[in-house]
Image 1 (cartoon, one colour):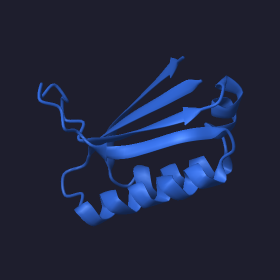
Image 2 (spheres, rainbow, N blue to C red):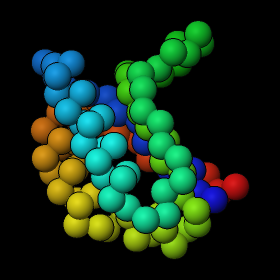
Image 3 (cartoon, one colour):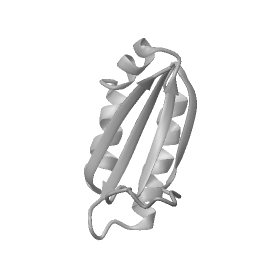
Length: 99
């Protein structure tokens, strides 16, 4: 299994509605991609407060590296980034963990 962890820092002025639109688009993308076994989205609830400006993120779990490798360059993924991430994201962090 591959756990695909993505964290977001949003640009100043990003609205809650824009963040919700991104979250909704990710759910749709998850449902269209094969090999996804689990998906969770949310804002940080850490009590350590070490987020360094990253306020939201998701974890998408893939059955294997091949499924993740298909997801990353997939046209639907690229479209989502262009439409929902790039306009509002100041910085992002991607970290994959193999189980």
